[in-house]
Image (cartoon, rainbow over all chains, first blue to last red; front, top):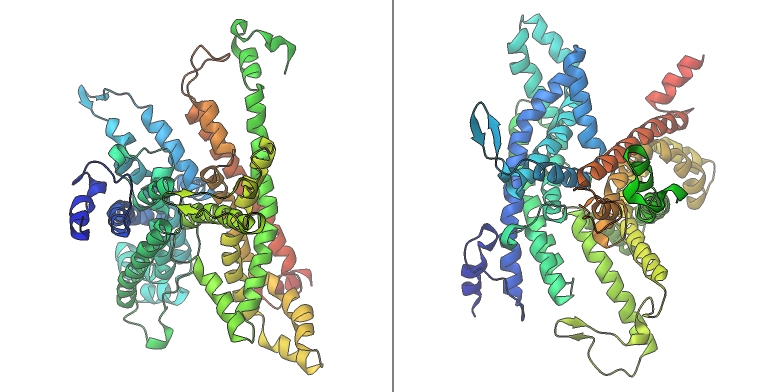
Length: 275
Length: 293
């Protein structure tokens, strides 16, 4: 069987297209690369969506935490503490166990029956956990940045008579993003790394449609040889990390474009591994 | 455990709960918390030692050592840690068995990697097939500790390398001007002063290490996650204490455990940071000096 044929059969296997049965014996390198690569689609799906929604929620929570009103500040502080203070692994387990307890035939809301069983599936349930988790980590980063906005910037805004919403939208928020961006880049990278935990933590892989690490450990279980599949996962993730750094670097340049070139903040990849 | 627990079917309410929570398996569950704490207690110093070695190598004068040190710290970046956890445990296991195989059975002719199997001679099995179950658990735990130390050592190396670079250059130059040798400067000036710079990074690492301990479950160690799943799953009336699926409550308990660990660590580390800043040429140290005057 040629390699192209394998790609056609298994390229979208993780999404449920192509050959139904996974290869059982005589694994070729091509099969491993194709299946693990197809699993990467899930990692990208989880990472991109959680990052996008998490970014929006993180802004709200960071502002709430910086608020003067305890009614807004306390819930935000607790949200951040719970999601940053406990392992993501336990959060996945907890969420899965909670979501399977939802009634099977839907919840009655105002006479309408809302189907909820899909929430216990990985594509929705795990995404929900990752979304809340990254929102908490990002909110803490944004909160820190919000507090380190140079005093002079705010005074200058006051001096120009900019206040309220336009002060926030034109001075505070862009500066916060600019200051937070290097740390946020790291958070994004580690969010992608965290997506590998999904199928190891309660959420079952429906019809053997899993992520990159799921297929890699499938191969390791079958061949008892860790020296091929895991380096393939590592290879894919290094590519993904480089792509992320590239994309975030472009945004970083845009956020810093008004500054003299020697005071721009550079993106630095600093490790902060498990959540 | 209690004599009143002899006939579980007759118990009601609180006394049922008390008996349920003191069954042999639950005692195992409580002991597994000790496994997690032991892992933390053993891994943290080991990883720190690995990190110290890595950082020293990374700033060595010799190119070869420098490449090894920097390569070690760069190794863990960009790759999900869980890949390392899954990889190292099997790789170490196979590596040890392969080595034992070479030593103990030199005249074994069959290939070790035969198709889909990894086969060594029976004498090379670690631990031996006839060994007690306890030794298999201990061996698994030791492999897990080494894996954790290797991965976290890389991060500690990164932090310590940064801290060593952060010690003010004048301090070292002063020591050199007093005629101290390279090693003396390192031991007497650089190392005592670097901890205050290293502590924020190391405390971050400690928090991450706490949150990484559930991964023990993936390494096949019977840790708290294993027992929570085992005990929480629904029990039919064939068991002494039948109950529906209670895994949610067990995981809630684990969550509270981890949150408490995080909170306690935060408080303790803040104190240590305060203590280390005493008399240092940093903003925090200066603030303490002002407050004392």
